[in-house]
Length: 165
Image (cartoon, rainbow, N blue to C red; front, top):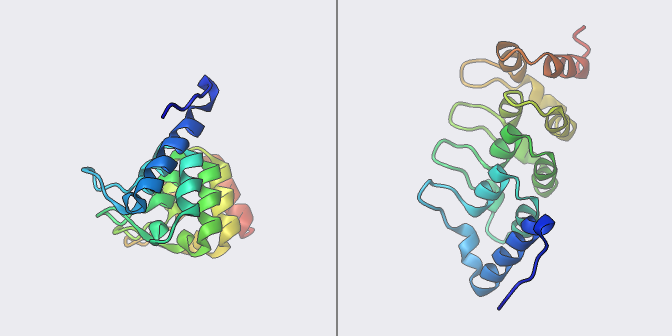
């Protein structure tokens, strides 16, 4: 079978290939590769929005709950990489995902403040404003991490959420 695609639609081509594979064997969505990465985590990390949406549509296996050995899930990785559309899709599938911690106790918000995309930060805080106050295992909130990383725009946004000015 040949799939014709335009250069601008490489993500749609990838989604079509993934869809074809899943039609053949849906359990492939549940597998982990050599780097202990599920297809959803891999797609979320790399910014493959159409593949993420496809996997979420076909999700009969609790894919959003799957995490690597370090406890990081697809939302952690998408947030860190600044993939706002993927963050929104994951939160739409499971709004409680914003509260999931990795083994260090960090939420996706802790990861987002390490990046540079404030739209991701807004999406996470809009989904659950209380996550701003959640500390990791060392007692650091996302505001602590943002301050340490010298992310002025992030600090301003978090401050405005709770009127810390």
